Image (tube, rainbow, N blue to C red):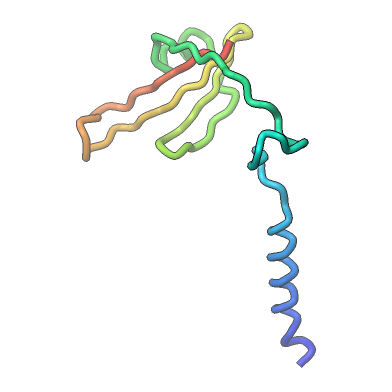
Length: 105
């Protein structure tokens, strides 16, 4: 009987510890001490596709899968750019993959 309650206790303990973990970025009002202030950020559109930027010597420094496709951050000579990749979609008129890039600095 003692061992039958052990799994239930472990599940309850695990659930309680996950419920108390902070989220990132910090959600909530701007006056929360642990939340950074929000400032306007300039995102300059880049008139080149991702493959052209990579062919010019840029290096991929991070990537992850966003809601609509991959998001890739690249660096080249101290300049940072991120690109949103839109894959081909046979259900729409988007029949080739495209990239939408923005310079951060």
